[in-house]
Image 1 (cartoon, rainbow, N blue to C red):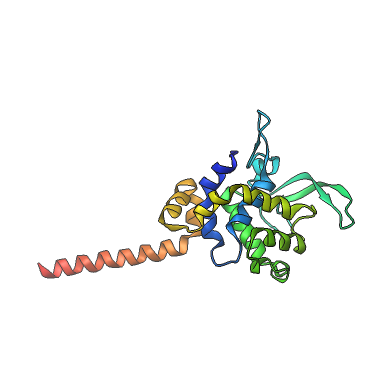
Image 2 (tube, rainbow, N blue to C red):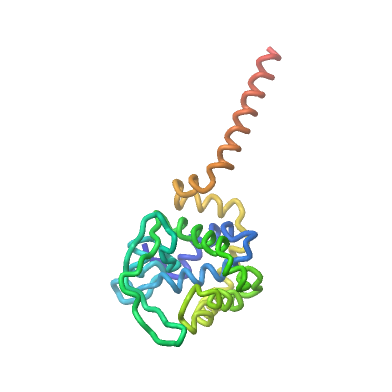
Length: 214
């Protein structure tokens, strides 16, 4: 499914705010990257978020290649720029494939936080989207020399809209579950199980108290 930029933020803004909480990754950076990496033309010729062949076929919204990936994958040609500034095509490049957009977002966060080169490049210490995009470029996330400007430009155009989702809250949790219940349960099964056990204990205790009073 493809979205306008505003529709994408509305659908996933709350989920994204929750995923990046405490990581140092800025919601604005993640959202702007997702838009930039996944946009493609729809049937009417308009660019839509999630409209690229990679996003449509593999739910990969961040252009993350396979690397040490052992899950599903999708192969496609992609444009790159060498360190010397020469543009070239990476033929039949292997990219990670996901079951949902939420899984792509979660893996993006995991991919960054588990790779020391992003920490060493200062990604998690950045205070603005522009600074973070520059650190990502410095760490080798993208080869396009203008990548930081493109990411920050997208954010500036949506800043007031994105910033509304800076806190996750109950509404964001509910929206995340409604959008993808199976993915939500897979990611949160431990706290769900703990809550379930707690509620069961409360129910049993309440039943015993009532029974003993009779």
